[in-house]
Image (cartoon, rainbow, N blue to C red):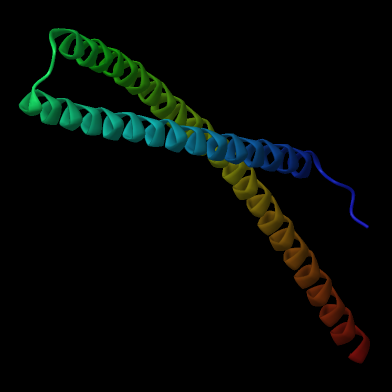
Length: 146
């Protein structure tokens, strides 16, 4: 059983951080999708209500009815404006979480690269040691044969 090295510990910690960053990014994307769907519903409802308002105006509408439609359309416009701000904030959060995930992934990959380089260096060292032993053994065999 091998003893974990410092780089192995760093890789494990970076992997855990990357996984958590990916989960956070997923949550942010889902939340942004939800806010965009709510905005689309509000806009659709406003369009339908405005169409009904136009139809009622053609049919004849009292001043009070006209005022009620206008007030409600204003409230819908305010709600849409507020929801657009929520969507922008959710998109900003997605971009922020994506950057955090990318940074975490780069860190993890750099640790992997360091570990691979260390492993390759150890393999080269082992190979040189084996070659040296083989050369020494061949030299001794040659001396014994004489």
